[in-house]
Image 1: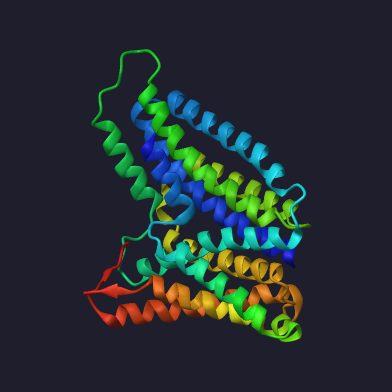
Image 2: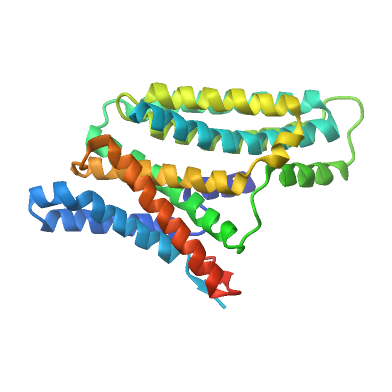
Length: 66
Length: 247
């Protein structure tokens, strides 16, 4: 049973915590930026801001060590 | 155009997961008996369908559309970015290439070494088939539910899943030669790009963004993540013999 639960966790959150943490941080930052920007500016540029944050999250998840 | 893109993304994602489930069922069927493998697989399909029917409408009913888009987008991002991460590592040679055929061979060898119980029901074989199909099926269910959760997307998502089911069934009937020839690593990377593009699109819309060119945004988002994957793969290849950081 615990093996199935572990598989379910991996299925939804992935093998490492980097992706869920990265997605969570990107969304939290996007919400903060939305609150700081005028509404029109967010409507026009918010999507690209979120995409850039997600690219950064992906790059962070690919960190390697020797 | 969104109809075609949603259907293609659902078909590709569901197809890949169904192939993995098929590899397990074939391995169980060839080593322990097709009847027990099919019974385990059918029970798993029924469990996934019931779970989706029970949870899907309940989760979606009455939900605020903006909140729903953020939740669905977030779910697609979790799947998409994970597939992208793994795909980049595989393309860069940091991780074993994905192959349902190899999984089939490994599963068959593992099961072949175990004793088969008498002439009655082979519960071990049923359980292996059930677990494999349930976990892969649940991923199909979650992706199809997520892609189909926003208005107008359910039909193409379901059609995509049905198309995938048809294609994987044909592969299953012709057995493992087509399984060996599929470029699964590249397909999974492509699905990661598509799911991440959809996830970004829905999440941003949920947060009040108006995408320039409307639904065309899905295409330039997919291009952005494809280029990112290509650049990341090249950087990893050039960086030399490192190992993946696993938390």
